[in-house]
Amino acid sequence: MKKLILTILFLLLLPSILAIDLKIKKTGSNEVIIEELNQPATFDLRIENLGASGDFEFYNLLGFDMSPKKVNITNGETKDVQLKIYPRDDLNYRGFYTFEYFIKDQNGGQIPEKLTMNLINLKDAFETGSGEVLPETNSINIYISNKVNFNFNNMDVKFSSAFFDLEKNLSLNPYEKKSFEIMLNKDDFKKLTAGFYTLNANVEVDGEKAKVEGIIKFVEKDELTTTKNDYGFIINTQIIKKANEGNIVADSETVIKKNIISRLFTSFSPEPDVVERNGFVVYYNWNKKILPGESFEITVRTNWLFPLLIVFFIVVIVLMTKQYSKTHLVLRKKISFVSAKGGEFALKVSIFVDAKKHVERVNIIDRLPPLVKIYERFGGERPVRINEKSRKIEWEFPYLEAGEKRIVSYLIYSKVGVMGKFALPEAAAIYEVDGEINESSSNTAYFVAEQRKKDIED
Image 1: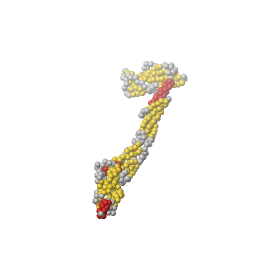
Image 2 (image 1 turned 120 degrees about the vertical axis):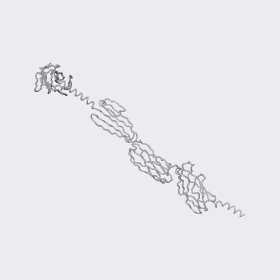
Image 3 (image 1 turned 60 degrees about the horizontal axis):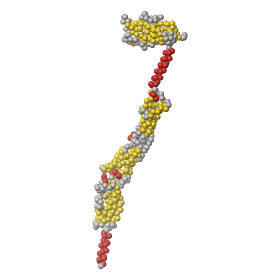
Image 4 (image 1 turned 180 degrees about the horizontal axis):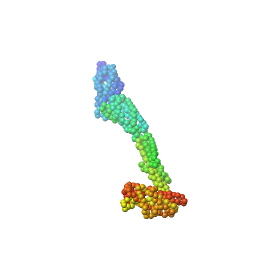
């Protein structure tokens, strides 16, 4: 009876004597599984055997490959084991994943344990970003950080954005962040509007590539500068230039005023949007939206040359009219070719005398050109004196009434051939008006020897 009882007690106590007695502690881990890299998650375990010595096997029921498969731990021994869990090709889950595995001894005893892995894609392992950018900024700080517990060695990163491009070769420890300062060229972004822009980081690790996106904030700045250039007097040119040196669309309004006279001689480029008249003033208005980095230029040109010429001619005409009105006796000289019997060169010289007012003691004097002789026969008024030596010919009238006209003429000839263009001197008149001596002169008459039978008059 006692033997039966002892046998039953031994059988009852045998499982507890043979049960696994392990103390397991996780001392470290690299629990990340990156799909593209096909690398295992690793867990550093410290296992203390408080039971019987033997071989202990690691396995799971979920299809993950595990390494090592088996370790030997003697009674009382503490052993560090690096347990590796390899990813499954058919597992599409992303994020933290907790799975159960077992440790089994050689006698069939086993204990369950749990581990948590982080299953991600390569792009989810990184984060990139930058500081803010102002229009006057000369540099910018950007960064890339490792978001997971994984070592990335010898990785190539190509940063690109609307503001810059940069290539880097670097390594990132778990949760490490690296920053870079980049010098900027303002010409590269002077036409960009304020807002948020994408910062791309193209990462390559062990031949695998991933694209990581961040954000660059381009801070708003409203800055519209105006420059004016005014030059020229007779032809006055005014240039107004407005440049948007900020990074938002700028509303520009330009107003120019002209009086009703100057507007007649003013041109615009481009043409104004609105023209308004208020009394004697005309307002020209331009409304323009100017994009960042762009400019708007207005050219206003006022040409005073034409009105000045008109004024000049008016003044000349007025002065000539006044001068003409003051002339009491007007002389006009005219010459014409005549045919001579002997084939000599011959001209008829006519002087038209026009009295604008009653004049007295009128003496008309004309000079003979060289190389010619005067024909002694006269068809009209005969001269009172002909001086061959001084080459003068004179006519006298006791008086001429206002509006009275006379014509004096004479013939000259030359036996010497004359060719080319020649000028006959002015005829002069000396007369009295109200007891005062006055003078007047005629025009200069020209003749061209080749022309025949054609009247020539200045």
